[in-house]
Image 1 (cartoon, helix red, strand yellow):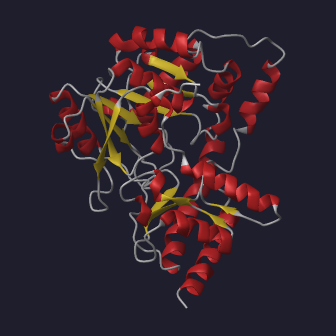
Image 2 (cartoon, one colour):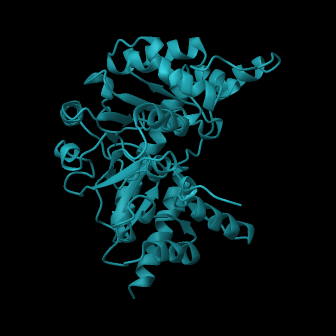
Image 3 (cartoon, rainbow, N blue to C red):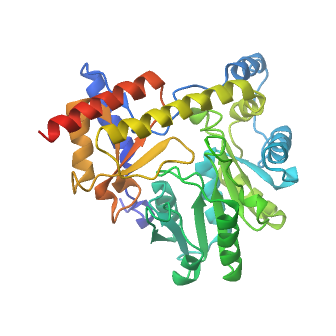
Length: 381
């Protein structure tokens, strides 16, 4: 049977690593998971209890833009966290951040248009762009520029749009207000759309992330309940769009998704009131970050930019290997630690990089680092 070229996307390698780790566990091995960016905690307990009370009522469709009370609460969140006065009418509740990207790319770009990605980056940007008939343009970044694109890249690559992420996956680096404003201005000067991925906001350590809404109203801002709110499996996120784009996005959302899952929306609403539990989770990530920075250095893995946020460290391993996929397989087989090859994030240079996640329990991170140190010592003797 015929097949569409839209389906010719690359695999998400981290999912393959997860499957290899699962098989090792099924065979009786104890695996430390540093491959996946998934909080080790679940949705906040108080939020789950409130949702359980509501499950006796039918949870049918919501309107396409999402529960009005959730949209209003998200708008208030921008005032609380950033001092931004946001009209709830601009908020769109989505089926995870992935659903938001599909809506954003469909609303903003025509077939074949060029959309820039600071590489290394979250791989699904590239694959979703390909699947909807757009042209992803990888913009090489460097350790020295903390893996973030520069304003001149917009004109240099003749872009119709630019995706920025702060804190970023896989690097954990952030853009400050001046840098984000400069990128927004560069996009405006070229009539290029700015899409700001902010799904790791709240998972920060030394400085608060800046939202694109602090520097411009002419951007699509994507966020999610998966990371800070610890709701990965519930598949609910949100997007803030310019006022004159709301109806366009609403029509797309109605036809593509009808709505985000109703139960997930209600849980998200309750989770936004669970600040104490969420901040306790963040304290675990902060402790893990400190362990990871010291533990990687102790293992001889020293070439990385300390992460500002998220829960990843992206490490240059070129002095040890030219094949990060094989190196990750070796670490899993010999040390029982699952890590992600950089090829997921940078097809051109990722064969020399690995991503380590520290989203799990602190005891697991400590054990994983001990195993890595022993592995690296044995490998060099």
